[in-house]
Amino acid sequence: MIVFTYPGQGSQTPGMGSAWVDHPSWELVEEASDATGRNIADLLLDTDTDELTMTRNAQLSTFVTSMVVLDAVSRTGAEAAAHAGHSLGEYSALCAAGVLDFADAAKLVNERGNAMQAAADEQDGTMAAILGLDDDQVDVACQKTAGNAWIANYNAPGQVVIAGSPDDLDRACATAKELGAKRAMRIPVGGAFHSPLMAPARDRLRKAIDQVEFRNAEQTVYCNVDAMAHTEAGDFADLLGAQLTSPVRWRQTLRALESDGFTTFVELGPGTVLTGLVKRAVKTAGRVSVSTPADVDGLLETLQGSKTSDAATATVLEGEHLFATERMVVSPGAGIFAPNESCVDGSVIEVGQLLGTVGSAEVRSSFAGEIKGVLAYDGERVTSRQPIAWLRTTA
Image (cartoon, rainbow, N blue to C red):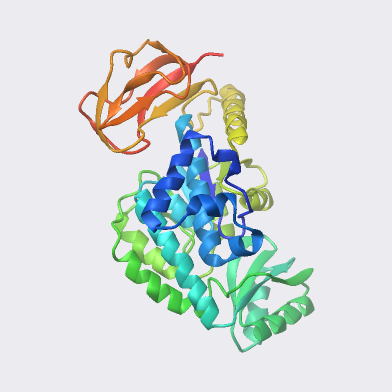
């Protein structure tokens, strides 16, 4: 089975949107800009390292990039049976699973970044990585400070991040080394994220969360707070509210996914941090990262190879249903679908060919090939990026 994972703050890089400017999925950047009132294209294309690293910018730019990548992957027909995101990436996972509307998710991420930035500005805090020490011993190192030091991220076996006030973190790092840690080092971040020092941000964010509609998940979402699978709409508001002051249980999440039968982990968004953590925590898993359009074809080849190799043992990868030669044409927006005469099973179409309209928007194919199935009927109300037609592409 396949799970899509989504990175958190720290994976952003200047110019990370440049590879996507001419891709159809770039339209999400404009949608997110309209929803938040911010120039996200500028963040993804022209913002320098120092400004992009600011929490309010890093979070929104990373979220939107992950959603652009997801949209591009979804256009090919590749799907996941579950979603999971690291910290900020949980918002990407919830949006991908249909729990949050894209515009609502963008607004929440923008508010989250602003709230965390404000909390960090008010309370001096930072984070540190502890390598080569058991989780319990890291907790002991924090407890021995008798101050503001807590575990913030359980990332992988022997890799834990702690958060707190600078002086207390220095003492915790020194104690961790005494207990046998291979390395204990500060991380250059501007706040003590996922610790009690983020309580002001949690309270501010909760007000925004209470204004948003949560839906039942279309696919399972594994959440940071408890590393458990969730699908019920009523669960997610409290989980997001608790997330800011609770540790990210990423190692436990990876183990839960492994235990539940997930064998292929696909990271969607900037960087390859989560792919590296999967390598450490689930050594037998398939690992793929997608951050540019060129990576999409590589993903399809990997998934196709997985299906081919699994055929001998009659294993089917749930969540990936299309071969590498197959693509989806998706709706450009929400509205009533009206097909034209070319949008029928068996039609051979060209790149850019009109298949119909959704409201006043045209539905044109980004691919050439034979229509193997029409997935929306005349007069159906469809949502943005809902599949319209399934193609077998031509060479």
